[in-house]
Length: 465
Image (cartoon, rainbow, N blue to C red; front, top):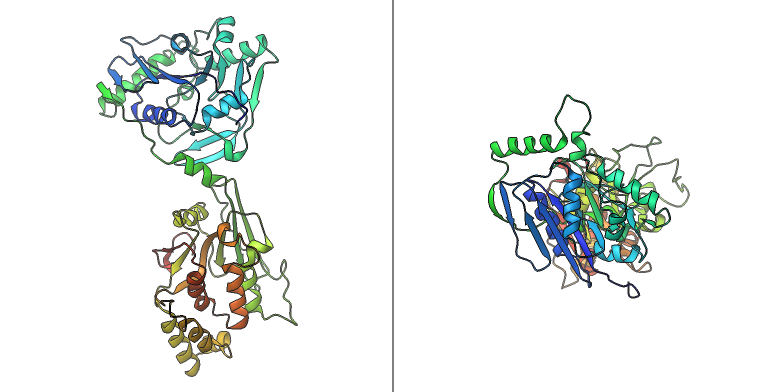
């Protein structure tokens, strides 16, 4: 952005009775990281509300009458704008902090119209897609608006009529911006919290009043229910969610991986929502054949569990689920990502034991007592030596035991491809034992991993059963 000019931009917002969404829209404006001059012009023609917000770059026009068409209201709003660049700033949509910088980047000196080929479609409470946004958040020249005669005096569909006039009059001066995923900035908020004028339909036929009347009737019905405040309203701009984080999380690439060498069929999971990329790989004897002469099936199973980042690189998050678990919900992956809460990995606490010593006692007593389940898995493993080796480290405090049947980690912990906790975890399974929950707590300490314990019983988790 260093070679970009930062022109004066007028952000135009028309509103009617939607205080909560307007506060989010204003918050989007005042948090713009834009070094140039900017202003937000708000036109309120709901006579029962007088909106107040004291900010040098925000001007609110409270009118005592309601415009008969949206086109008239738009034209009045643009007349109040001081800049030639007009950025549509709808009261129910949002802008990330880089939005005005994106406008400066894509809107050229001789441009008349900018549309977003890539932006955020938000369906409360989550990002639905990174996609084209049609006429939402358009940017245009005030001079061009004048030349085509302003907005048509229409309601639903007025924006399309206006855009067609711009494109027909200035066929070579339209920009379609496609910022990369990590630079998208305009959020089209559809569904889940408010109403859209476009959902009320066009003004046609004699059997219904025009959309302004229908819109006003809806607001009045909500006012009578106590849902719409009236009188002097001191606006308190804020966001309902951290939308920057939601978009940042959505564009992360997720790999969900599971394995069962005994099962030749792929265990399907629901398609995961909330991410642009959420791939699922189920490893079995068909796609990961057993190395019969060199590798025991139990040790082989540790390869996808601990080394998925090497087998399948370039993901941001890796989620492991043992073959005895599966994802049961469309938002299971999102739930795991949410568990990170700023950490680099998240694991379940073992539901029955809390130390390496208690796990060692259970296994050794079970082996000595002839427990067939434990004998099949751990007979001949160097479990005692392993635990004693860890406990010799005087700085290590054995106060956590992890149930490693399902967990998530960020690619941050494997940035060093030559030496990292996941590779070392596999190494300890090779030289000590395949009882992997013995080595994991010590290695989390040794590598100083910023991890979180998930405060749920792994066997009762609703998202991985």
